[in-house]
Image (cartoon, rainbow, N blue to C red; front, side):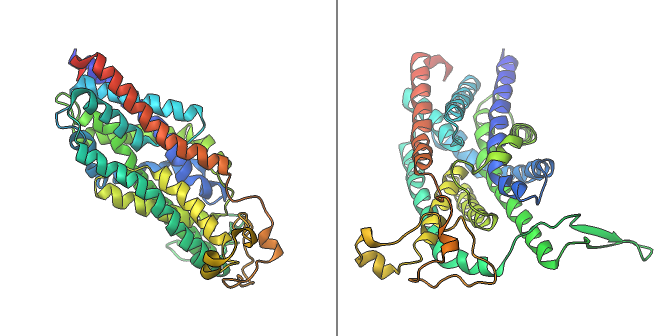
Length: 392
Protein backbone atom coordinates (compact mmCIF):
# COMPACT_ATOMS: atom_id res chain seq x y z
CA UNK A 1 0.00 0.00 0.00
CA UNK A 2 2.81 2.41 0.94
CA UNK A 3 4.59 1.69 -2.34
CA UNK A 4 1.44 2.48 -4.31
CA UNK A 5 0.88 5.79 -2.51
CA UNK A 6 4.56 6.70 -3.01
CA UNK A 7 4.29 5.92 -6.72
CA UNK A 8 1.24 8.17 -6.98
CA UNK A 9 3.20 10.85 -5.13
CA UNK A 10 6.13 10.59 -7.53
CA UNK A 11 3.75 10.90 -10.49
CA UNK A 12 2.17 13.98 -8.89
CA UNK A 13 5.62 15.45 -8.24
CA UNK A 14 6.57 14.89 -11.87
CA UNK A 15 3.36 16.58 -13.01
CA UNK A 16 4.07 19.63 -10.83
CA UNK A 17 7.71 19.77 -11.95
CA UNK A 18 6.72 19.38 -15.60
CA UNK A 19 4.49 22.45 -15.41
CA UNK A 20 7.13 24.39 -13.48
CA UNK A 21 9.62 23.60 -16.25
CA UNK A 22 7.26 24.90 -18.90
CA UNK A 23 6.71 28.18 -17.09
CA UNK A 24 10.14 28.94 -15.60
CA UNK A 25 12.17 27.95 -18.68
CA UNK A 26 10.16 30.36 -20.81
CA UNK A 27 10.63 33.22 -18.35
CA UNK A 28 14.36 32.50 -17.95
CA UNK A 29 15.39 31.98 -21.58
CA UNK A 30 12.59 33.56 -23.63
CA UNK A 31 14.39 36.90 -24.23
CA UNK A 32 17.66 35.19 -25.20
CA UNK A 33 15.93 32.74 -27.54
CA UNK A 34 13.93 35.57 -29.10
CA UNK A 35 17.15 37.48 -29.77
CA UNK A 36 18.66 34.44 -31.52
CA UNK A 37 21.49 34.11 -28.98
CA UNK A 38 20.66 30.55 -27.91
CA UNK A 39 18.46 27.82 -29.37
CA UNK A 40 15.49 26.37 -27.51
CA UNK A 41 17.24 23.02 -27.09
CA UNK A 42 20.38 24.62 -25.69
CA UNK A 43 18.28 26.76 -23.34
CA UNK A 44 16.45 23.71 -21.99
CA UNK A 45 19.71 21.77 -21.52
CA UNK A 46 21.46 24.60 -19.66
CA UNK A 47 18.29 25.18 -17.64
CA UNK A 48 18.38 21.57 -16.44
CA UNK A 49 21.96 21.84 -15.16
CA UNK A 50 21.49 25.06 -13.23
CA UNK A 51 18.05 24.17 -11.89
CA UNK A 52 19.66 21.07 -10.38
CA UNK A 53 22.47 23.14 -8.86
CA UNK A 54 19.98 25.62 -7.41
CA UNK A 55 17.82 22.86 -5.96
CA UNK A 56 20.76 20.97 -4.47
CA UNK A 57 22.24 24.03 -2.74
CA UNK A 58 20.07 27.02 -1.87
CA UNK A 59 16.85 25.10 -2.54
CA UNK A 60 17.43 22.84 0.46
CA UNK A 61 16.73 25.79 2.78
CA UNK A 62 13.34 26.35 1.15
CA UNK A 63 12.65 22.61 1.30
CA UNK A 64 13.26 22.62 5.05
CA UNK A 65 10.74 25.43 5.46
CA UNK A 66 8.09 23.71 3.35
CA UNK A 67 8.54 20.24 4.87
CA UNK A 68 9.10 21.19 8.52
CA UNK A 69 8.61 24.90 9.22
CA UNK A 70 5.02 25.69 8.21
CA UNK A 71 3.32 22.97 10.27
CA UNK A 72 4.38 21.53 13.63
CA UNK A 73 3.93 17.84 12.80
CA UNK A 74 5.53 15.45 10.33
CA UNK A 75 3.57 14.96 7.12
CA UNK A 76 2.17 11.56 6.32
CA UNK A 77 2.89 10.23 2.85
CA UNK A 78 -0.79 10.44 1.94
CA UNK A 79 -0.92 14.07 3.10
CA UNK A 80 2.14 14.88 1.00
CA UNK A 81 0.51 13.37 -2.07
CA UNK A 82 -2.70 15.32 -1.39
CA UNK A 83 -0.71 18.56 -1.11
CA UNK A 84 0.95 17.87 -4.47
CA UNK A 85 -2.53 17.39 -5.92
CA UNK A 86 -3.64 20.80 -4.65
CA UNK A 87 -0.44 22.41 -5.97
CA UNK A 88 -1.18 20.91 -9.38
CA UNK A 89 -4.79 22.08 -9.17
CA UNK A 90 -3.67 25.61 -8.32
CA UNK A 91 -1.30 25.57 -11.29
CA UNK A 92 -4.12 24.37 -13.53
CA UNK A 93 -6.35 27.25 -12.43
CA UNK A 94 -3.57 29.76 -13.14
CA UNK A 95 -2.87 28.18 -16.54
CA UNK A 96 -6.56 28.47 -17.46
CA UNK A 97 -6.25 32.22 -16.89
CA UNK A 98 -3.00 32.26 -18.89
CA UNK A 99 -0.88 33.59 -16.02
CA UNK A 100 2.58 32.32 -14.96
CA UNK A 101 1.97 30.13 -11.93
CA UNK A 102 2.96 31.46 -8.48
CA UNK A 103 4.06 27.93 -7.57
CA UNK A 104 5.80 28.72 -4.28
CA UNK A 105 2.77 30.62 -3.05
CA UNK A 106 0.43 27.84 -4.11
CA UNK A 107 2.60 25.28 -2.29
CA UNK A 108 2.65 27.29 0.93
CA UNK A 109 -1.12 27.73 0.68
CA UNK A 110 -1.76 24.00 0.38
CA UNK A 111 0.49 23.19 3.36
CA UNK A 112 -1.08 26.01 5.39
CA UNK A 113 -4.53 24.57 4.63
CA UNK A 114 -3.40 21.28 6.17
CA UNK A 115 -2.07 23.13 9.21
CA UNK A 116 -5.34 25.02 9.69
CA UNK A 117 -7.41 21.86 9.40
CA UNK A 118 -5.27 19.95 11.92
CA UNK A 119 -4.50 22.91 14.22
CA UNK A 120 -0.77 22.48 13.61
CA UNK A 121 -0.05 25.68 11.66
CA UNK A 122 3.07 27.61 12.69
CA UNK A 123 1.51 31.08 12.65
CA UNK A 124 4.80 32.88 13.27
CA UNK A 125 6.40 31.22 10.25
CA UNK A 126 3.43 31.79 7.95
CA UNK A 127 3.22 35.46 9.01
CA UNK A 128 6.88 35.94 8.14
CA UNK A 129 6.42 34.31 4.73
CA UNK A 130 3.36 36.43 3.89
CA UNK A 131 5.23 39.56 4.98
CA UNK A 132 7.95 38.79 2.44
CA UNK A 133 5.28 38.18 -0.21
CA UNK A 134 4.13 41.76 0.39
CA UNK A 135 7.59 43.27 0.62
CA UNK A 136 9.12 41.49 -2.41
CA UNK A 137 6.98 43.20 -5.10
CA UNK A 138 7.74 46.56 -3.48
CA UNK A 139 11.49 45.84 -3.53
CA UNK A 140 11.34 44.69 -7.16
CA UNK A 141 9.31 47.76 -8.15
CA UNK A 142 11.62 50.33 -6.57
CA UNK A 143 14.86 48.67 -7.59
CA UNK A 144 13.41 48.67 -11.11
CA UNK A 145 12.52 52.37 -10.80
CA UNK A 146 16.09 53.26 -9.84
CA UNK A 147 17.52 51.17 -12.68
CA UNK A 148 15.11 52.57 -15.26
CA UNK A 149 15.59 56.17 -14.19
CA UNK A 150 19.33 56.32 -13.54
CA UNK A 151 21.15 53.22 -14.83
CA UNK A 152 19.43 51.75 -17.90
CA UNK A 153 19.65 54.85 -20.19
CA UNK A 154 23.39 55.24 -19.48
CA UNK A 155 24.17 51.55 -20.10
CA UNK A 156 22.03 51.59 -23.22
CA UNK A 157 24.25 54.36 -24.63
CA UNK A 158 27.33 52.18 -24.21
CA UNK A 159 26.13 48.68 -25.07
CA UNK A 160 24.50 47.16 -28.13
CA UNK A 161 23.45 43.52 -28.04
CA UNK A 162 23.45 42.13 -31.57
CA UNK A 163 23.56 38.71 -33.22
CA UNK A 164 25.57 38.55 -36.46
CA UNK A 165 25.13 35.95 -39.18
CA UNK A 166 27.17 32.78 -38.92
CA UNK A 167 28.76 31.00 -35.94
CA UNK A 168 29.86 32.94 -32.87
CA UNK A 169 33.20 31.08 -32.70
CA UNK A 170 35.29 29.10 -35.16
CA UNK A 171 38.42 26.93 -35.04
CA UNK A 172 41.66 28.17 -36.55
CA UNK A 173 43.51 25.14 -37.92
CA UNK A 174 46.81 26.74 -38.94
CA UNK A 175 48.78 25.04 -36.16
CA UNK A 176 48.83 21.45 -35.01
CA UNK A 177 46.38 22.26 -32.25
CA UNK A 178 43.23 24.06 -33.47
CA UNK A 179 42.63 27.34 -31.66
CA UNK A 180 39.23 28.92 -31.07
CA UNK A 181 38.77 32.27 -32.75
CA UNK A 182 35.94 34.68 -33.48
CA UNK A 183 33.46 33.71 -36.16
CA UNK A 184 33.65 35.38 -39.58
CA UNK A 185 31.18 38.14 -38.62
CA UNK A 186 31.67 38.14 -34.84
CA UNK A 187 33.06 41.19 -33.06
CA UNK A 188 34.68 41.16 -29.64
CA UNK A 189 31.76 43.23 -28.33
CA UNK A 190 29.27 40.66 -29.61
CA UNK A 191 31.23 37.85 -27.94
CA UNK A 192 31.34 39.72 -24.62
CA UNK A 193 27.63 40.59 -24.64
CA UNK A 194 26.68 37.04 -25.65
CA UNK A 195 28.71 35.62 -22.75
CA UNK A 196 27.04 38.12 -20.41
CA UNK A 197 23.58 37.07 -21.64
CA UNK A 198 24.40 33.39 -21.11
CA UNK A 199 25.82 33.97 -17.64
CA UNK A 200 22.74 35.95 -16.60
CA UNK A 201 20.48 33.21 -18.02
CA UNK A 202 22.37 30.59 -16.00
CA UNK A 203 22.05 32.74 -12.88
CA UNK A 204 18.29 33.02 -13.35
CA UNK A 205 18.03 29.26 -13.97
CA UNK A 206 19.91 28.69 -10.69
CA UNK A 207 17.47 31.02 -8.95
CA UNK A 208 14.51 29.21 -10.52
CA UNK A 209 15.87 25.90 -9.23
CA UNK A 210 16.38 27.28 -5.74
CA UNK A 211 12.80 28.51 -5.51
CA UNK A 212 10.91 25.93 -7.60
CA UNK A 213 12.55 22.52 -7.08
CA UNK A 214 11.37 22.45 -3.44
CA UNK A 215 7.76 22.93 -4.57
CA UNK A 216 7.78 19.62 -6.44
CA UNK A 217 10.03 17.80 -3.96
CA UNK A 218 9.23 18.98 -0.42
CA UNK A 219 5.80 17.31 0.03
CA UNK A 220 7.46 13.92 -0.48
CA UNK A 221 10.53 14.72 1.62
CA UNK A 222 8.75 15.74 4.80
CA UNK A 223 6.96 12.38 5.15
CA UNK A 224 7.86 9.27 7.12
CA UNK A 225 7.71 6.93 4.09
CA UNK A 226 8.70 9.43 1.41
CA UNK A 227 11.86 10.08 -0.57
CA UNK A 228 15.30 11.18 0.55
CA UNK A 229 16.20 14.81 -0.13
CA UNK A 230 18.62 14.13 -2.98
CA UNK A 231 16.32 11.61 -4.67
CA UNK A 232 13.39 14.04 -4.54
CA UNK A 233 15.54 16.84 -5.97
CA UNK A 234 16.66 14.63 -8.86
CA UNK A 235 13.06 13.61 -9.63
CA UNK A 236 11.91 17.24 -9.54
CA UNK A 237 14.82 18.37 -11.72
CA UNK A 238 14.12 15.71 -14.36
CA UNK A 239 10.45 16.70 -14.41
CA UNK A 240 11.34 20.39 -14.79
CA UNK A 241 13.77 19.43 -17.57
CA UNK A 242 11.02 17.51 -19.36
CA UNK A 243 8.81 20.58 -19.24
CA UNK A 244 11.70 22.71 -20.50
CA UNK A 245 12.28 20.51 -23.54
CA UNK A 246 8.58 20.25 -24.43
CA UNK A 247 5.90 22.76 -23.40
CA UNK A 248 8.44 25.53 -22.69
CA UNK A 249 9.27 25.76 -26.40
CA UNK A 250 5.98 27.55 -26.96
CA UNK A 251 6.42 29.63 -23.81
CA UNK A 252 9.84 30.81 -24.98
CA UNK A 253 8.23 32.04 -28.20
CA UNK A 254 5.48 33.99 -26.47
CA UNK A 255 6.98 35.10 -23.14
CA UNK A 256 6.46 38.81 -22.61
CA UNK A 257 3.92 39.08 -25.39
CA UNK A 258 1.08 40.10 -23.11
CA UNK A 259 2.88 41.76 -20.25
CA UNK A 260 5.68 43.64 -21.94
CA UNK A 261 7.62 44.32 -25.12
CA UNK A 262 10.92 45.41 -23.60
CA UNK A 263 14.27 45.07 -25.41
CA UNK A 264 16.83 42.44 -24.47
CA UNK A 265 19.07 44.82 -22.50
CA UNK A 266 16.18 45.84 -20.25
CA UNK A 267 15.21 42.17 -19.90
CA UNK A 268 18.72 41.38 -18.63
CA UNK A 269 18.37 44.03 -15.92
CA UNK A 270 15.05 42.44 -14.96
CA UNK A 271 16.58 38.95 -14.86
CA UNK A 272 19.50 40.00 -12.64
CA UNK A 273 17.26 41.91 -10.23
CA UNK A 274 14.56 39.25 -9.95
CA UNK A 275 17.10 36.43 -9.64
CA UNK A 276 19.02 38.20 -6.89
CA UNK A 277 15.88 38.89 -4.87
CA UNK A 278 14.69 35.30 -5.28
CA UNK A 279 18.07 33.71 -4.52
CA UNK A 280 18.63 35.77 -1.37
CA UNK A 281 15.17 34.97 0.00
CA UNK A 282 15.53 31.29 -0.94
CA UNK A 283 18.86 31.20 0.90
CA UNK A 284 16.96 32.56 3.92
CA UNK A 285 14.45 29.70 3.53
CA UNK A 286 11.57 31.91 2.32
CA UNK A 287 9.40 30.29 -0.39
CA UNK A 288 9.09 33.06 -2.97
CA UNK A 289 7.84 33.35 -6.53
CA UNK A 290 10.40 34.26 -9.21
CA UNK A 291 7.50 35.48 -11.35
CA UNK A 292 6.48 37.98 -8.67
CA UNK A 293 9.89 39.67 -8.58
CA UNK A 294 10.16 39.56 -12.38
CA UNK A 295 6.82 41.21 -13.11
CA UNK A 296 7.24 44.03 -10.61
CA UNK A 297 10.80 44.76 -11.76
CA UNK A 298 9.53 45.10 -15.35
CA UNK A 299 6.92 47.59 -14.17
CA UNK A 300 9.50 49.46 -12.08
CA UNK A 301 12.04 49.82 -14.90
CA UNK A 302 9.35 51.11 -17.24
CA UNK A 303 8.07 53.57 -14.68
CA UNK A 304 11.55 54.80 -13.83
CA UNK A 305 12.55 55.16 -17.49
CA UNK A 306 9.33 56.99 -18.29
CA UNK A 307 9.68 59.54 -15.46
CA UNK A 308 13.07 60.87 -16.60
CA UNK A 309 11.50 63.99 -18.24
CA UNK A 310 10.68 65.33 -14.75
CA UNK A 311 12.91 65.69 -11.69
CA UNK A 312 12.07 64.24 -8.31
CA UNK A 313 11.29 67.77 -7.07
CA UNK A 314 8.87 68.31 -9.96
CA UNK A 315 7.29 64.92 -9.38
CA UNK A 316 6.52 65.94 -5.80
CA UNK A 317 5.46 69.54 -6.43
CA UNK A 318 3.92 69.58 -9.93
CA UNK A 319 0.32 69.04 -10.78
CA UNK A 320 0.23 65.37 -11.90
CA UNK A 321 -2.02 66.32 -14.80
CA UNK A 322 0.73 68.50 -16.30
CA UNK A 323 3.54 65.95 -15.89
CA UNK A 324 4.37 64.59 -19.34
CA UNK A 325 5.15 60.93 -18.64
CA UNK A 326 5.07 58.39 -21.47
CA UNK A 327 4.79 54.76 -20.36
CA UNK A 328 6.16 53.54 -23.67
CA UNK A 329 9.54 55.21 -23.20
CA UNK A 330 11.54 52.06 -22.67
CA UNK A 331 10.12 50.21 -25.66
CA UNK A 332 12.04 52.21 -28.27
CA UNK A 333 15.71 52.09 -27.31
CA UNK A 334 17.96 55.14 -27.66
CA UNK A 335 20.56 54.96 -30.38
CA UNK A 336 24.02 54.09 -29.10
CA UNK A 337 25.63 57.19 -30.59
CA UNK A 338 23.10 59.51 -28.97
CA UNK A 339 23.14 60.41 -25.29
CA UNK A 340 19.94 59.97 -23.35
CA UNK A 341 18.42 63.30 -22.28
CA UNK A 342 19.35 64.36 -18.76
CA UNK A 343 16.90 64.06 -15.91
CA UNK A 344 14.27 66.78 -16.29
CA UNK A 345 14.71 67.19 -20.04
CA UNK A 346 12.10 66.05 -22.60
CA UNK A 347 12.69 62.85 -24.53
CA UNK A 348 13.27 62.72 -28.28
CA UNK A 349 10.37 61.86 -30.53
CA UNK A 350 11.94 58.48 -31.37
CA UNK A 351 11.91 57.37 -27.78
CA UNK A 352 8.43 58.57 -27.02
CA UNK A 353 6.89 56.56 -29.84
CA UNK A 354 5.98 52.94 -29.28
CA UNK A 355 3.44 50.77 -27.54
CA UNK A 356 2.93 51.05 -23.82
CA UNK A 357 5.53 49.28 -21.75
CA UNK A 358 3.02 47.16 -19.93
CA UNK A 359 -0.64 46.35 -20.10
CA UNK A 360 -2.31 47.51 -16.86
CA UNK A 361 -5.01 44.87 -17.23
CA UNK A 362 -2.35 42.18 -17.45
CA UNK A 363 -0.70 43.51 -14.29
CA UNK A 364 -4.03 43.41 -12.45
CA UNK A 365 -4.56 39.84 -13.62
CA UNK A 366 -1.11 38.78 -12.46
CA UNK A 367 -1.49 40.38 -9.04
CA UNK A 368 -4.97 38.90 -8.69
CA UNK A 369 -3.59 35.42 -9.33
CA UNK A 370 -0.95 35.99 -6.66
CA UNK A 371 -3.86 36.35 -4.25
CA UNK A 372 -6.27 33.86 -5.79
CA UNK A 373 -3.73 31.05 -6.34
CA UNK A 374 -2.56 30.53 -2.74
CA UNK A 375 -6.01 31.38 -1.37
CA UNK A 376 -7.66 28.69 -3.49
CA UNK A 377 -5.04 26.07 -2.59
CA UNK A 378 -5.40 26.95 1.12
CA UNK A 379 -9.19 26.68 1.05
CA UNK A 380 -9.22 23.47 -0.97
CA UNK A 381 -6.60 21.83 1.24
CA UNK A 382 -8.35 22.98 4.40
CA UNK A 383 -11.68 21.60 3.20
CA UNK A 384 -10.14 18.27 2.23
CA UNK A 385 -8.17 17.68 5.41
CA UNK A 386 -11.08 18.87 7.57
CA UNK A 387 -13.42 16.34 5.93
CA UNK A 388 -10.82 13.55 5.76
CA UNK A 389 -8.70 14.10 8.88
CA UNK A 390 -7.29 10.57 8.79
CA UNK A 391 -5.15 11.39 5.75
CA UNK A 392 -3.10 13.91 7.73
